[in-house]
Length: 196
Image (cartoon, rainbow, N blue to C red; front, top):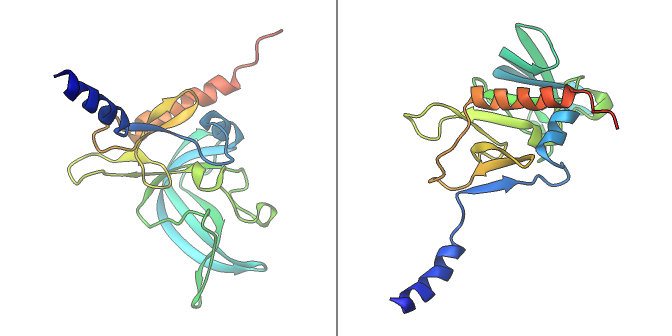
């Protein structure tokens, strides 16, 4: 029995944990992303149209069914402009710029201008790190929040995203839970610093 434990214990310790903390390269912690965002909202992609600008092609994404967490904006629809797209057979863009599908529900951490030539049409704070998508992990389950790479978000711990990197990790945040967590972080950041 002792021999089995001696062999089994190192094997058990080597198994991957069901959760991992997300550490986006060059982004800092999650609270920093929230702090740097001028506008945080949830919206459903209603349309995506490519258009030519002086420096190339951009995609204008129209969001509807808006819920604002930080900042404010129009009630009916909001247009975000990002670099790249496909127009007249020409495809442009960068790997950091997320793409969107009509009907997709997202939570976005954005800059106030929502993408312009001033910021090279990069509307999201931390590029793709500021984009979260809602979809079902399986056909019979409710939509849950995923990071831009499609990994479910399980929570926020020690100022970092906690991702469910294993199918057996039970916790996954709904849109409501994620938006409430974002609201709490925004409220904490708006509190005045205590006097020294």
